[in-house]
Length: 451
Image (cartoon, rainbow, N blue to C red; front, side, top):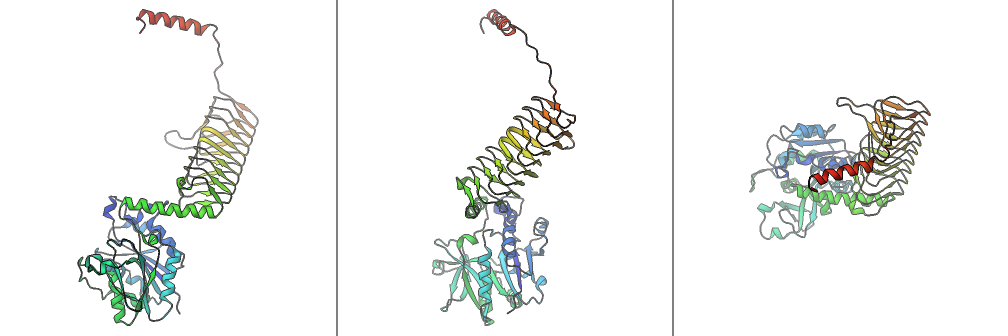
């Protein structure tokens, strides 16, 4: 049996109920667009081709799905017409074609593979349709079965009789069809229904007339959930986060309060990592083994290497790399900075566009001034250096290996290896000054009537 596989992703709807200038499938769940999740799930099946159906003037979508091709549905007149818009991309395609909606980010490769496997189990199976059992089916299309359990027809809710509305098995949006037949069947769909649209759900009856059966593959309802509003989008986020937390814990990470930790889809977490409450991982984070992340940290676009210690209340911004056994403490912000192995920044610092050498200590209140209002510059700090508290390093500047910076210094010139850099006015102590000052102020206050 031929094993070629193609995929059509339907993403031509704008999603007006989102109340957004962003197209609905481009809204994100766990740091990845909804359609990005769908593409990732389909790619796990190694398809020969993926085509995304878009509406007119959807350049934003076309860019987002590259390198995959797009087809344009010129008129929003139903899912059947949408799938048919991809016809030219599958000329003489002799494999199977998977059709899926672009806003079902929870769909798994396992469920999609079952759709393909059932379609291929017998030559008389022309299609498989995904179905879910709903306790409260609401507005979903109902799946009416034949006596042998194959799919007779799907009735859209608005067209369903009272008896058909009692059916719990509902159409959920995924089809796998014989690629040599799919577009012939799509061309036979009519718009004789309440919405006057070309429903892809008309296919089972058309295929049956061609002596091809349609089987139903039941999938978990959760996997087929979409989002038409921000409320529903938040619901999908909640489900996805639950999945990601479970995944990382099963892979060897400890989450002390899982419900308060938020991952992105691409977050990589090593073994024996401990993550405290209220930690957020943005996109592009890689955590090595034996890392400890204390509560209330925000980490994005960064790598944290083995044995490092981060937080509490630390912010690690994109472009940063925290070396092995390094320490980033409370209220420290790191941006586009490389902290080498064993280096420490324990408290209350901003380190931007900086390279910090091994075993260097950054004192509390240190700031690297990386921006002059027009351009950004780097600060380089050597290994085993000591930066005193409340220091300001004005880039571009280099602090040498083993150098010391005196507390409360503003350093704008390079400091050589093992040298002391210091900028500080001489200290002056005036004897009895405070006592005289208090007496003067008491007299002033008395003249004003004690006010």
